[in-house]
Length: 357
Image (cartoon, rainbow, N blue to C red):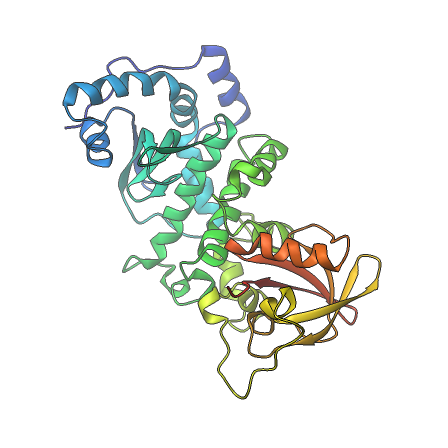
């Protein structure tokens, strides 16, 4: 059974007045859903972690600690919630179809957050006895808007939506570097209207967000500068205009699609070391540039788009010191895919490499 906290906790009047003065809230109307922020849903907390709350009183006690922690998040939503929903729709070019939904604020959650049911953990991601703490402040706001952005993009899959034509585009595929990256771009653009842009980007680029945004390399290296969003240049319009065989679509293919068909005998490059594991060999062409001198057409490097003659410039934004450092950077960061920038002739390119075990 749900009930709102008896005493809503607010920020001081001066802070709320400052919010309203800088960013007036949009009036609630039928263009945005009616959204409640719930910070004391005992049954939901028990369902998430039944072993932690064996009796109802333990859930009640936990909720008593959540309310003070949720103070700034609740105040932001009370002052700006409708405006955020409206801005997401305007920049996304997608209408809200859902008439209403709830935002659950909990102490812990098995993931960093989720968009359905929309849930924001205040303290950390919890799996068994392992807890990964989450940052506070702007990080909480970015988490909230990120999940709202994902929820908005999911509207295109609801029958009868006007943006249903986007559902079949490859970039809307539910993978980290496609759907999730687009949602992050929309969230960053929207939140930058309400919070200092540099502060928002600092949080997104921080180490603590590395595992929370696995599509971050695509956002920062491609979408953020090349796909600026506005009400006149919406995300929906940019997706619709992107050819299904574009470089961006190729770059963001999920790893299971990067396995080429076997068309002949495999050619092993180098010794059974880093070279053969990655499927290519390099030589230092000049300081900071490493030329691919051989590549195995049956390995993931070739499938990711790398070719013989390409000049590798950096790995996940870092310039390798030498060839050994280049291999080390790739292998150490291989878990979520490694972003490699290269030159092919005079043309810059990028690939996401998933090294084989």
